[in-house]
Image (cartoon, helix red, strand yellow):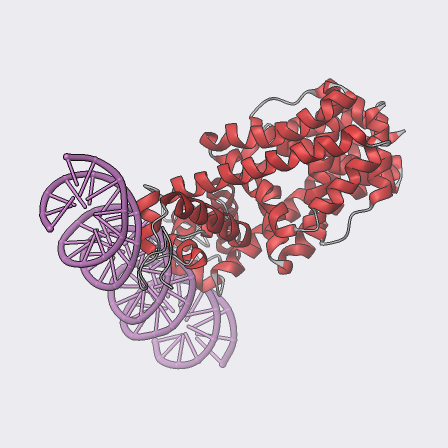
Length: 188
Length: 188
DNA sequence: CCTCTTCTTGTACGTTCGTACAAGTACGAT
DNA sequence: ATCGTACTTGTACGAACGTACAAGAAGAGG
C-alpha cells in the first residue's frame, strides 16, 4: 500500500513551511522558558524542534527575529487563553474566587508562567518589545475592567502579576484565600 | 613632590584586593541591569570595571560565582535602603502616601529597578538563587508587616512588585494617587 | 638586604556562537 | 517531461566566549 497525496519519500522530510515556522517558534518558547532569552541559541532551538540548524536561519533572518516571533506566538496563545478566562468569569457566581481558581490553574505550569516575566524584563530593556509586553499585560486588564472598572482592574492585575512573581520565586503553592480576600477588597 | 605611603609606581596599579572585588561586583550589577544575566560576560564586566580580564577569574572562580556575588551585593544595598525606608515610614503621618513616595523615588532609576526582577527570574529557574531572591522580597514584607499586619503586608508587597513591573514595561510614570488608594484599601 | 606569598596582567586554548552559503531535493507551472 | 522556484541540509567561518596559566611585580616578614 503506497501512500496518498502528500506523504514524502523516506530520508527527506515532508515539505510544510508553515508547520516548520510554528515548530521553530514553539521550540523557541520552550528554550526561552528554560534558559532565558539571553541564553537562547539557534542550536538549542533547532535541537528541540528536531530540525537542522539551517532551518532556523532560513525561516527567521536573525536570532532576535526568531525570539520575537516566539514571544509573539506566546502572547497570542495567552490571549486565546484569556478568552476562556473571560467566559469562565462571566458565568461565575463569585468573581474573586473564580479568578483565583484560574490563576491557580495557570500557575501549575511554572515553566510557562515564567514566559510572561521573561517578556516583561526583555521589554523593560528593549523598547521594541514593549508593545508586545504591554498587550500581554493589557489582556488581564481588559478581562477585569468590565467587572470592576478601570482603576480596580489596574490594581488587581498588578496584584496578580506580583503574586505570580512571588510564587515563581518561592516555589510555594498559591495562598488562595488570602488572594481572594485581597481581590475582593480591591474590587469594591 | 613624590608621594606618601601607599601610592604605587606608574604603569602598575595599587594593590587593594577588597576594592577590586567590590569594583568587579559593582560593574557586574551594571552589566546585568543593562543586558541581563544571560548576556553578562567576563569581558564586559572587566571593561566596565576598567580592569583586565584576568582579574575577573582571579577573584571569582567562575562566571556564575561573579554574578552571584554581584546579586548578593545588590541585595545588601537594597536591604540598606529599606532601612532608610523603615525610618521614613515610622515618622510618616500617612503610611500609604509615604510608601508611594518612596516607590516613586525608587523607580526614578529604572536600570536599578530592573535588577530585582532579573534576580527573581533567575531564581525562578535556578533554585540556588532562591534564598537570595526570597530575602529580597521578604525585605519589603518585613517593612510593612509592623504597620499593617502579616497578610496585608503580603498583599501590598505583591501589589507594589506588580506595579513596578508594569512601570518598567510601559516606561510610564507612576500613578501615585491610584496606588495610594489601593494600598489604603489593602491596609485596612 | 633577600625571600616568599599574594596579586597583576597578557595571552592562549578549546568551545560555542550567529550567520552565510553551496549543493541538492521536491514540486507546481508550463 | 522540463524547468524554475522554494525549500532542505551539512558544513564552514570568523568572532566571542569561559577559563587556564605563565611570567612578573609588589609588599610583608625575616
